[in-house]
Image (cartoon, rainbow, N blue to C red; front, side, top):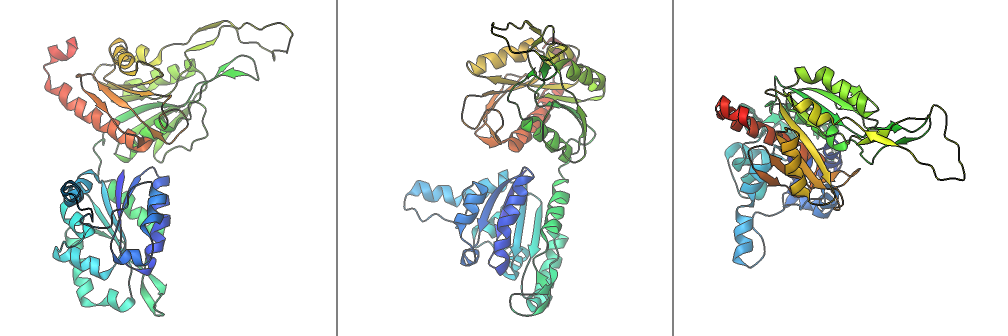
Length: 412
């Protein structure tokens, strides 16, 4: 998800740096917004380095040009439209008051009013400020509007007093974030089948043919689909990645094993995402014993592996099928050809030679080629963000295809 983290002016602001890291580890993209007071406790540079994103500190740009001022004047709207959740940690009494009363005199308070995303607030302040009737009234108003309040902890405070007011533990904040994000359950009732990782084709008992796939793209798709409410079955080639929470994982090794696992589960799926990098060929006659070094050249005869996507998609029925095309040239041409030849609904294509778009990296640069003729190029995004966009496109496609007459769908 894309999370906007608001950091306000309190001693606990430094704890937000680690919060950025935790959110990123879970696959989220974090956009940090800082108030002026927050910059008295921690610098924007810290958050920029951690998040890899521009840190927003002002409602209006200091640039003199009209274009720059126009861009900054509407930036809060753009951020509000693309954020999946607004998290404010720490939130001062001043910020709570602004949110509760609808004041909008800085970027964060303006963003709060402009956003329709879920809001999680983790207050931190002096114990007397926390217990003041005005603060409690503001909290009550925010709760009534659906804002999740992560209650501060009790203990020794920076001011020297003891009592409630400490920023809640990160685990409590992350739990509230997870609960808020689970409100986006647009895949509830769906069963999503995902393939991921490489396959390994044995030459002998100690050697095999494989590729550079890490499985990160497929695992991100499985994790995001589960977060959006789907029952997810992940069929994975060999990888060191951990199984995403709430996902059923089936481990396989070869292309034939992956095909059998897919065929055994395809009938219960409503969406299938084929992100695995399946070996196109396998040794025709794997050696029963280790092949010894010799002085003569060694020739190994290869035979084609089954085409998993084409095999199962030919009888897909009403299922939506997503394929991947990792290309090194003629990306668009090859992707459109694959879309038609393999009876897919969506092809996710990328040039694996481009920096930040190949194997075993955390980002990707892809274009989504859809069955209804739409080509959607995406900028460099994390693989979790790419997974979000793929699932968004699946929902869009389903609406388009369902709106067509049955005879038209059958003829596609």
